[in-house]
Length: 312
Image 1: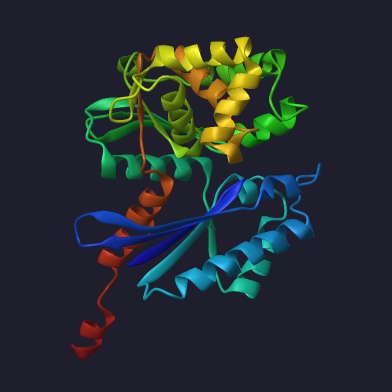
Image 2: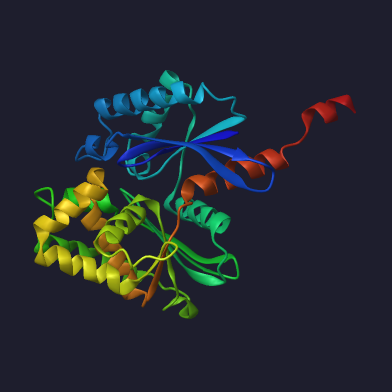
């Protein structure tokens, strides 16, 4: 069994996987809402309290991993440690206090691992993958099981919320600003011509949370994780017409995302519109599964058998 810890902008998550040599299976999934993005100051430094929160969260997860006989634990971080100027200082402190060596993924790496995770779950000739995270959004256009384009946008549901939203739920004009910003970024992405109007595969917590909310409102909309893009716009229209009812819907479905779900929905809707998407597919696997396959298992398989070499 293997463990993967993902240090994100809003949460730090541990997933324990069982690997039988051909396929992976989740055994445990534990999340801590650490909110590390909230500890980054205006000079783009992680404050000491943020480092302390990260250390405390990792030590809590370590007590969980100690209960398993794991072959290996891989720890990676995305936007919260990628976008600060004191990354090295933070990494040294984390390793000193927890023993974990953290790999900070670039935006391109995050997108590539997300695509590797997608391939573990979905077999599709061509399409577009998107993961709207807390501090960034990754996009991959793929065809014949190969990535044709991978890119990362430095905006996700949490930092969009922090920049544009004054209260808990965004006002329509605030959501419009988020839409305008994300649309501008998506329009800059030069997808291969064949990639437009293809299915949009949505990874990450924002996409999965939206499906739960959508199913509460329109149970008939989702089939095997798939739904028409029109329902994304339909839910945004419902929010504009009935903001209090929409808030209640989130609180009953995904209360932890009361502040970030709408910014995430706006980002997904902008991408779907710019890319001419008609069908959206929710994906359970993502960057953590991709990191396991590409960073841990492949390297383990390619690692020289030192014992055999020594014997020779």
